[in-house]
Image (cartoon, rainbow, N blue to C red):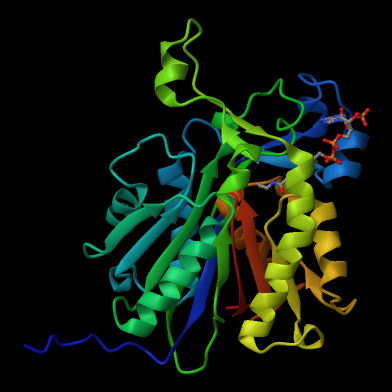
Length: 332
Ligand code: UT7
């Protein structure tokens, strides 16, 4: 028996991007109430001036739906046209059901396929790679990829190695069929030997069995992660450009995961990008929002007019795992 095969589109592209930034702005002075640090140290070492922390009503669900509505509208689509929803997050408080299923329902999709993925700060780029494959193989037509986090729920405000970094928010992209390729091949991978550099402090059962019974928090040994990100990730980003057939002098926009402004600058230098390339620097006002950081930084560049639709952009996400994924995209 011959099994029929789905036929996909020749290529895919990002059709619309939207973000949600929580209302509450937390400046470095507020962070320094709980850690021995200073506004000057935080700005110099990380580039962060302020970040957003979600209030009780700004849940993973609420932020995902808000970002997605903007992305769907900007793509010129109706929610019922979305047939697949992928949510990338490491901070959804429910292990099951997937956030993607309830987000798909609230948006008004017609029973879209829906699932969550856990790839930390690379989650949005992992989801984008999956969406591209789904569309080109005919598995899906319009895929909604959401990166969303409430990292403040998992941050110890008294831990000076993480308290100033992590933040909350959501970014979403609608990816659909295109005659002209708008997404290059993904370059991705993992290095589980370095898993201990960014971890959850304890598994849930141990945390809840302890005397204090508090939820676990994220812990990071920052400096080795910094070096891995600045050097190894620059190589992966160069491979993503090679895979897409884009030379550094042809690139127009660079949006790496918003982990640290100095990592962004080190990657920019290592990639030998021309000075006129526009760089995502959303970390200054948004902090590190893990899976949400790349789409939020893209939205910021488009909304400010610094970057524009049709430009060629390199994105790369990297983080806990350690995992990474990068690709060249055309901005929607
Ligand atoms: O999103 C997932 C991926 N994450 C990343 O890519 C994050 C990568 N790592 C980083 O961004 C940086 O490592 C940090 C911003 C976290 C830290 O910067 P660093 O330049 O690597 O600092 P360090 O850990 O090497 O510490 C340098 C000094 C130390 O003091 P001494 O030993 O030189 O006297 C630390 O004790 O800075 C001190 N320090 C602080 N001082 C003030 C560490 N944290 C703080 C702090 N405030 N919050």
